[in-house]
Image 1 (cartoon, rainbow, N blue to C red):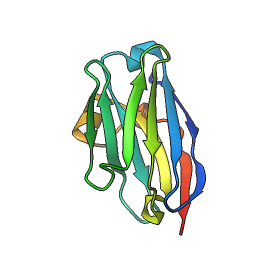
Image 2 (tube, rainbow, N blue to C red):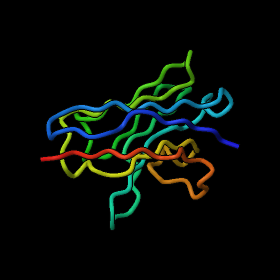
Image 3 (tube, rainbow, N blue to C red):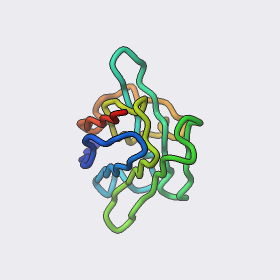
Amino acid sequence: QVQLVESGGGSVQAGGSLRLSCAASRNTYTNNCMGWFRQAPGKEREVFAAIYTAAVRTYYVNSVKGRFTISQDNAKNTVYLQMDKMKPEDTAMYYCAADSVVCLLIVPDNPGHWGQGTQVTVSS
């Protein structure tokens, strides 16, 4: 069973920054695709950032390129998401995920491969 523990999130004004963390078990973290997806009310889930931990290869959707940075800490089996220059349209519930499809920017079908989610709200 994949175990992912998220932290961070909260509220910020437009232009501000937030940092999310996702801690995983060593088995989940090692040689895996980990990333973040979000879901806003009335919208589809969207994987927007991913990282292949074995190669530190990163993937982003265009809407967050240049603003969000995904990174990893191998000693802590943790993936981070630094979000800068945030916009009101970034408001959503954010989830960490660990699954091979995440590097294809696809949301895993199995909710067992998701974290519990954390709310991010950006006010204008």
